[in-house]
Image (tube, rainbow, N blue to C red; front, side, top):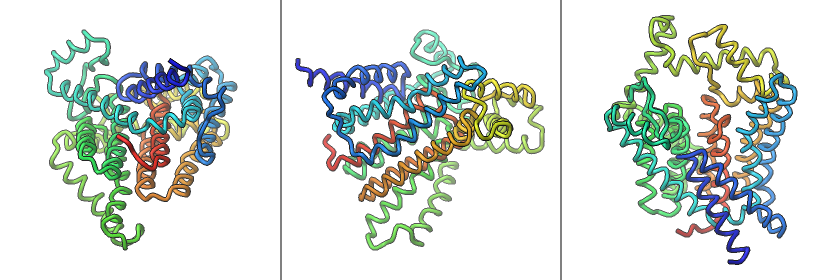
Length: 429
């Protein structure tokens, strides 16, 4: 077997492990990165890196974000914790570098990689459904017997607090499935294959019963670019920014949530729980209930306390090594019985590395979208890019998902999938 064949096999396995791991296993993601790192010297020595120069520019900001967080670790009082956090978030730099080294191979295999992601996501979704219908005692027995499954929670109301996710965190699973919804919708338009329409509907159904409200609401808004694209396709004379598209979009945003709420019991129960939480928080009576499981209260207190920390260090931040302890300390003082979690990635970056770190990361999102819209003439590809950009911006406002392993690797990877599809004039199945 010659060197080129070895490179092709090992790199492809790395891509598949990485993509499939995003919905089922952090270990598989790490193993995929190791495979890609092992073959990177073959491309570097041959000097055969093939990528359009304009594609790199937005990701400079992503790498710079990581470098600025690294600097913040140096002025953290707890430097050991800072370096630990950097190891978790190394995907901000290692992922763009490795994928751009292997860009030609990634672009050539992007449809197979995406299809493999769909396949593993479908398996994980079916397993989630099985756990949903299984009696609690049996479900707990499975999780105790097989280490591949996450621990089954002691307190769980499947409709009020969301389904149990057997492999990875429930919300992270919903975020990955959301990309599957958006990308399968894109491929259904681009290839006109029925299987993508079925997958889109199936993944959307799983997200709805998972009870991931943030993903559901973000998806609602992120689908608008595709709806406008469909209108434009059927009515070529219509302008994208017109009264017709505006009325249609507003109608979609009003009608779809109401229909979903009324027809799907798990959705209705989940949002009724949120509305009840808001009511008891407003009148202060939440202290009479088991409010440690109130996700709405946890999120609101996290926003409040994060802003308090930022006020003390608005320019340079508190340092990535001290963020966790600072948030835990202020929760202990002001909200002792409420779990301390980061619920906004933008606020997290501001707390950790200061205002400049936040601006650099936001610049990545803006530059990527601006660059994409400027360089790609396809309305469908632009709809794909705008749709996922809306989703990510919305999710990062309510969850610090990129602080964690699967989020920091997953979201940049999904952006790169969109880039690869846009640079592929034909999709071969």
